[in-house]
Length: 478
View 1 (spheres, rainbow, N blue to C red):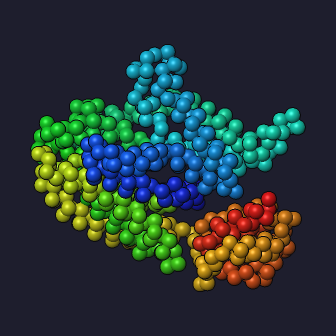
View 2 (cartoon, rainbow, N blue to C red):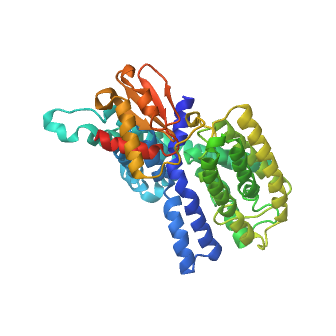
């Protein structure tokens, strides 16, 4: 189970990689003009939001592609198909039609159906359908729909049943969280802490929007964001459900990224640094933390729970001391500066002090837990064990083609290779007869190593250029 969760985490790396740039674009646009009147600001903000606003779709595609056996495009298409089916069937218009009521009377839960949880579920279903049906041959009369063409069809069918279940389950779960949020809203600083904890904990499901609606908007009369912005709240109180996020997003999570970088395996550190630096900067500058959080929440779920707890403590502390600030975009540096002079901002400079303390806590706690529990944060995944040598110096397409041809021949070619896929550094090969594998021929290409991991399974360790070798092998197999 844990191995599958880690595979899920790795499959998110492709869509996660594009998010920091999108967050920075939106942040710059918001920085230029927070009222979004300036055309340049609007252009930049919308360019970034076109990606950030569609994270669920990106995850549906990325998860399907990452978990499918052959990383095939039909799996990615099926992930999108699955997402479109469930979000269309459970849109407010469709639900209103099914229930025979006006759109305005539809349960608010269905307004939040396009979320990360639905995206991930769609991707998982699509990958399962691909792995099960991509090689199925139908009778001649239906032959056109055989194999990979069958995958999106089966995905859409399964997602219809999933939609039927969610039609009853989703509103109950969503409304329960709204009721929970309303109940804890009277608990002062403790309530703020509980909100912060569950806000982060629910990020993978998209249900954090249910809690946000209670505290940030006018569902239960709190309207923390609106009142802070227009100055109609109470100084030291209004903003208590926003302020504690600043120390986490500006300082805590970037420090966690540094800890993950320092604990990454030596040969993976440079690759981990590129991801962690970009996501940490996005968190600090714009307050968009999903790219960084999704980089480890599935690879090391225990660490993510610790992060959620620390977020809760941060909100509780800021609320207890009545250090308040607010945001319109997210709790990053941009909003911190823009909200600093607002009338209801109360000792916002103390959030910087609190943030520096949390940075130290995050860094040392994350570093200790990662090492102590051997958590698989970026750069520490099991599949990323590299030998001393590397073939990273290989650059030319011609060299990749020659290398791929020799490796494939050494594996026994078409007659012996049953399936082949790649992770970040290895070719994972299923062969019909492992005795027909010529290890000497494969090693002659300069690969760092070969591992036999089963009676018919072999891993060829190539290095970080493995994708290019795998692409060339795909050309040979076709």
